[in-house]
Image (cartoon, rainbow, N blue to C red):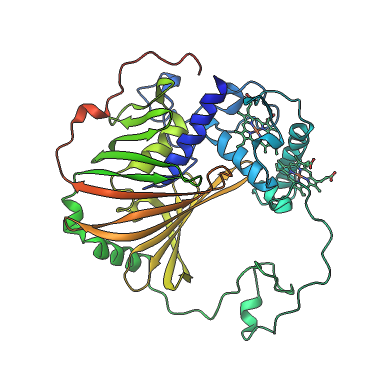
Length: 408
Ligand code: HEC
Ligand code: HEC
């Protein structure tokens, strides 16, 4: 039972990532927990913590439940291993609660160390994570390998070497890029304005009331799932993914969020709901600027052979995103999200391609998502059909009546 729930959780995360039209992937804060019985105050901002939901949490206490699986994926990615490095799997049955594997307890010691070093040495900022040392291997390398890479020729621009803490280092592959002389950059507003113009202009966007779309979701293992999504302004949605385990549905009617799968119907709350709402918002890829409390033009970069402007934005919950706009066309080519957790920053990247005009607005028909999920590190969402401003049956958005699942 537990096992299939986790499978679905993992699946639903990858679906979330790949269907992404989205904002942010973590945020515990900023959403109402209906379990706390408050229709009244959207100020009841907390969601359940891992120890309130799981059975055997000793060190990750206080972490929002919606971060559990992302953080576990982060552990696995840091180790270059999978869940079974620390958890027992007997005849296909996962027992995540068990402490049988010594690696799990070692991981607990490591978590304590990471919490401690960040608290004492880095004044509470999460600077050191599992990946800082492990870098995809369970036994981190502590001694430099000889011979060292040959030193690169002295940088033409000595000023560029200052700052960033990397000065004086030999430039090994993967070393941090040095800033080249600053080109004149447009302002963030200029870039956002050019984007709005590039996708069709404000008048076309003002007319957008709903969207109905269909397509496929190709996972890293080659599985292809069919999906449909219906979105109505300002924030209602219904999403259906046909999986080997059966239909997987999610919806939000403006008040109640829900999920229906092989294991029943459940209400979505807290950070999970906030994240799924952000992902499915009709305007998630359109009204970009409004999503940030602060933006800054970080510079110019390249994606493939395209020159891009990079904007760094801070979301209301403090998490960061980077937006990469094509210098020439003004279109958004990439969006990366960094989710702060207590043990490290979890990255995610979506690349957008194949912009096509649909009734006056351009949408990317392909979105490639890269995550730290070892089981599904890359997936591609491709639309086959998008229709705008067609009538959508509003009852789709309501939570279907069905027995509640037995397990929380
Ligand atoms: C590097 C070791 C490591 C890896 C890899 C790892 N975990 Fe964990 N996991 C832990 C530790 C340690 C805990 C307990 C944390 C605590 O005590 O606060 C835990 C707890 C859990 C729990 C909570 C169990 C309970 O009810 O108490 C679940 C569920 C879980 N892990 C799932 C996963 C999944 C799924 C994966 C693969 C994506 C995974 N873990 C990968 C170390 C790991
Ligand atoms: C400061 C560097 C550092 C950080 C940060 C760090 N580790 Fe480690 N970790 C090590 C070293 C070094 C070893 C190997 C120790 C040994 O060989 O006895 C190790 C070993 C381990 C092992 C045992 C591996 C094995 O093959 O048995 C696990 C599991 C582990 N770390 C998990 C984690 C997790 C999870 C995190 C993040 C919460 C983390 N580590 C953060 C340095 C680090």
